[in-house]
Length: 203
Image (cartoon, helix red, strand yellow):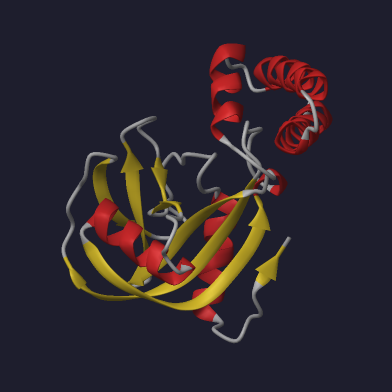
């Protein structure tokens, strides 16, 4: 199944780029047909509706590049900060899409503040990874950027996107939102926290 998702995303990216650079409307129509085929393939693989997948693909213009998802690992008293997502009722590291104009560290600090109420400072790049290495299939091609962050203030507060904020030990993790954070990733961030000289993980 993962091969089908990868092929469909590559076809979709090539088709979108082709539409952008097409020299005439005939080429544009052919690339659009390829994009529709890719949307059908992705919908089947990701158990989604083709119309919704096509809408997501249509939202990207120009040369297609991966989206960037930032996550912050904040520790206190040997526990890691997690937030419960309103969308699926499961837990994750605070984070989300990086905004245009934000440096990556600014983006993760903002996400932590908005989703948990806590203030934190990014102090180390933990990992830059391709989402598909650890997570369920997704319509988007995504690079995930994880930071070790130092708690500097604030207090627990939920948001429109989160319904709970809490701290968890490594051996008592709650049900996780696997598309956002996995248990394997969180255990790795505990290792980085305990061994600050570990190198950044990538790919």
